[in-house]
Image (tube, rainbow, N blue to C red; front, side):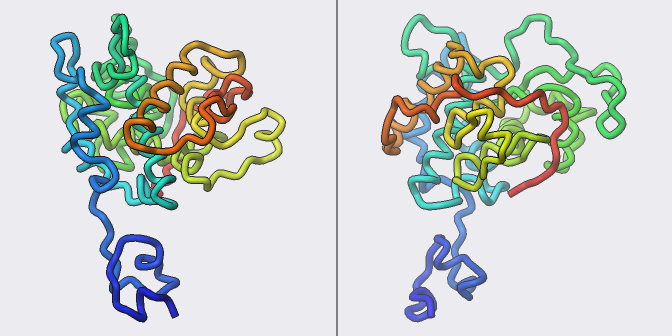
Length: 285
C-alpha cells in the first residue's frame, strides 16, 4: 500500500494525486505554479517590462499565474526539474516572441511587445476555412506571448478557451489573462503532424520513423521546430540560437540544471523542419 495512504500525508505529487494509488482524498493540487516560479524570479527574468519603449507591463505575474491554473498539466508533469524546465522553455519561447531590440542584454528584454511589430499588420486570414471563417473586418495578426496568428489558430483557441476569438481577436491585446491562456493553449496542444511543446518538454513525446529520419530529437530545440521550424530550423539560423540563449538564461535564473549547454537538442539547426500546420487540433492536457 502506498505510503501516502499508510500515514495520511498530504501533497501534490503523483504519490498523492494518482487515482491508481487511491490517494485522491489526500491530494492537494496546486491551483497555479507559484511554488515553482515566484514573483521575484519573474521580475528578474523580465526587468524591462515597464520601460517606456515597451508595453510589457501588460504581461503581469498575476495574469500568468491565473492562466496556468486553467491548464492542469503545465508545470505539473514529471519531477520538479522537468516541471521547471518546461516553465523555463515556455517563458523563453514567449520572451523571444515579444522581445524588444536593445543593444545589449537581449535576454532580459522579453515581454516587451503585445502585438507583432510588422507595421502592416496583415489580416492573416486563410480564406475558405469551413470551421474557422474569418469575421468581417477582423485581423488575426500576432498577439500575446506566443504571437498567435491566423484565423485557423484563433478559432481553435477560442473554442478551447470558451471565448469567440474569431469575432473578437482584439481581446488578446486587452486582457492579460486571456492572452496568457492563448499562449498556453498553443503550448499544450498538438498541431497536425507537430507534437505539443508540452509533450516534448515533459518527456512524453516519442519520435516516429519520420522524426528519426529528420533528426528531430526531444529537447528545447524541438519546441522551436514546432513554433517556427519552417523558417528557423535545419541550417543554423541566428534566431534559433537567440531562442536557445533565452532558455539557458532562464534556466540559470531559476536554478534549473542544464547538463550540457552545447547539447544538440537545445537547437533545431540539425533538424529538418515540419511542414506548416495552419490548423490546430484540440487536445488540452
